[in-house]
Image 1 (cartoon, rainbow, N blue to C red):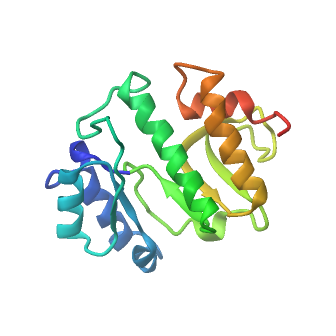
Image 2 (image 1 turned 60 degrees about the vertical axis):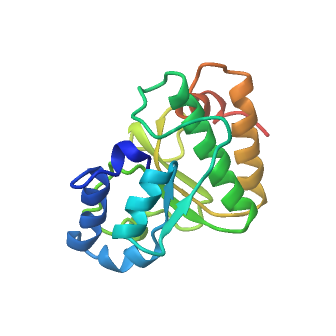
Length: 181
């Protein structure tokens, strides 16, 4: 997702796109990239440099155009809006691999995903066991397969923000990941 803070010339967005052109086996992935823009300026820049791959996600009553401080005010709203949007993609039947804009694609990650797993997420702290819920999830990279389980999980995750006010989506997923739905 991109706002105007990432949309300037020679910005993070440009590095993100360039990484697909220079990474190992990544150029073929560019035709599948969708850039979700959070404001008009970001959308205009996106359409200019990456036509037909930009989507303007409008959010009534909130201006997401400027830089946001981690875990404060509008940043939390922006992260929860992202979670809500990704959940809506699942309801439409779309699988997705989401990465933050500051992810550099040095190689194709699809061959490294675990086959047959519905939800895979990066970890800030990984202990070597991919199914251990004590690994600390990082929401900046996730692969999700659209099915009943993941749709229900995303609903549960989004609603859980109300039980943990003042927490971002990454902190909440780390609190609920072991819960039964």
